[in-house]
Image (cartoon, rainbow, N blue to C red; front, side, top):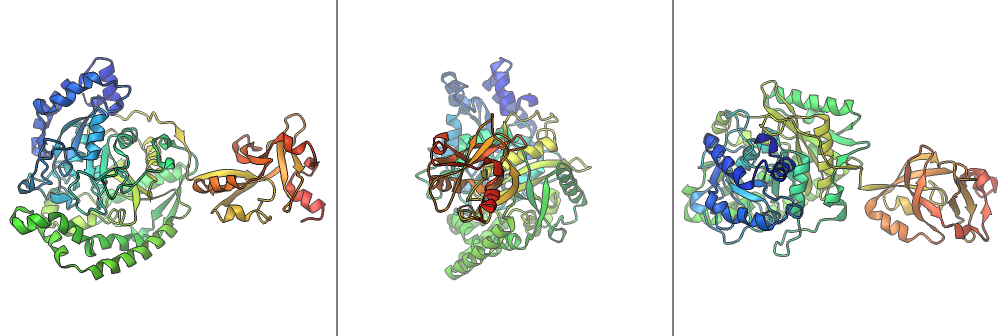
Length: 604
C-alpha cells in the first residue's frame, strides 16, 4: 500500500475502488504494531475511536473535501477531542472536549486521525530521546535519532503510517525530524496556523508545523490548516501573495543566500558535509545563483533562544508540574526549563533590544535574495550519542534552526541527498514572514532537480502536479517616458523600492506620441501593428505590494497594461488609450524613444 500514501495517490486508489478509508486505517494499525520498537506512538486510535470520522465520509463529497479519507498523525501536545493529551508526560495528561483549531479544520476537510505521536517531553528538544515513552528511532536506521521534538510525527509519515502529520516548531522541531527522515517539513509563518489547542512550549514563538512526503501534499494540507482565529491572540491573517494559488513549481532565475565556509558546522559528520556540497553543486549547475551571506547575526539571534530570557516561557508552560510533581518531568527537560524561574524582566527587555538590532542586520543580509539556504542540521547523531551527551549535542542540532521564529521567518525543509550509509540529508529554505508559498515553490523545484524516493517507502516520487509560478514579490514594469532613469518622475519608482533591470526595446509594433499638458511632459505609447516600430523602454522591478499605489497615481489617458518587448516576452507597462492621441498629440515615433526626442528638441 506504500505507493498510495501521497494524498493524490491514496485518493486515486479510493476513486478506483482499490482501497477504502477503513481498510487503510486497519492496515495502518497492523503495521503500527510491527513498528512498536520505534516508539512512534503514544496512542493509536482503535477502530471504535475512528468510527465516527470514517462514517462521516459517506456524507462528504471527495470533490469538496480535499483531505477525504487521508490518514494523519498528531503530535501529542496538540488536542484531539476525546483522546488524552500528554505532552510526553503521563502525569500531565488531560482529555480535551474540543480538538485544536487546526485539527478540527483538517477533520472538516475529511482527514482521519491515526493517533497521537511521541515527542520530546513538553516539546523541549530536537532529538526525540527525551520521552518516558522511549526514544523514537529513525525511520532509516533505528540506531540513530529521529530528530525532535516532533519525533513520532515525522517517523509515522516516513514509514507510511500516515500521509501527513502535525508537529510543532519553536526551535527547529518541524525541520530537523524532516531532514533525518527524508520528508518535507513546513515551519509556517508564526500565527498562520492557529495555536489554540496546543500545549505551549514558548507561546509567543510556537508554530504548529507540517510533515509531508512531497511539497504538493504539504501545500494542500497547509491550505486546509491555515486561517485566522479570533480566539487565538497570536493568530495572523494571511496575505494574498501567500495564498494557495501562488504555490507551484518555481521557474525563472533564483538567487539564494548561502553560508560562507567559515560559518558552516558539521560537527565531525563528513558525510553530511559532502551531501551539502553535492546539493550546492547541483544547484549551481542548474543556474541557481548562490550568494554568500554573513551568518553571524543569525547565529547570535539563535543563541538568545536558550541562552536568553525566552527560556522563561518554557518554565511557564511547565510551572504547574514543576510545583506539584517535578520528578514526573524528564531530568534533562527539568534542568533546562528550571532556568526560567529566576529570570528578570530587565533581562527580557535587554534581549529584545539586542534581537531588534540583529533582525535589522539579518534583513539587510537577505535583501535582494529569494531565500536563505542552510543545511537543516549539521550532523545526524546516534541515540547513544544523545543519551551520553544530551545537552551539547542537542544544541548543535539547532545551530541552523534556532533563530527562525525569533526573527519572524518562515521555512521549508526539503530532502536533497543520501549519505553513502543510506541516511537522509536535506537543506532548509528560509524567508521573511508570509513567504511560505514562495518557499514551498522553490522547494518543489529542488525536489525536481534532486529527486529522491518518498520517505522511507522505497517508492519513487512522481512529478509535481503544480503549475509553474514565478516570483510574486516583485512585478516587472516597462516605462517609456518621464519614469525613465534620471527623468522627472523616476522618483515614483525609486521611492517604492523599484530597481532597474534592463534597458531594451519594445516589439516593433508601437507608436510614440507627445501628449498635451505638463509639466512634466509625457509620451504615450500606442500599439500599432501596421505602422509601428520598436521604442526604447526600461524594465523596472517594483515590489508588488507597492504597485497599487503607483498605478493609482497615473493620470489619463495613460494606464498600465501589457507591453510586448523585442524578445517576444510581455510585461506590465505604460500604455496609452488611442483616444488620448487623436487630438493635441504630436507623433514622435520616428525618434525611436523619449530620450532621443528630448535630445532632439533640446529638452535633455
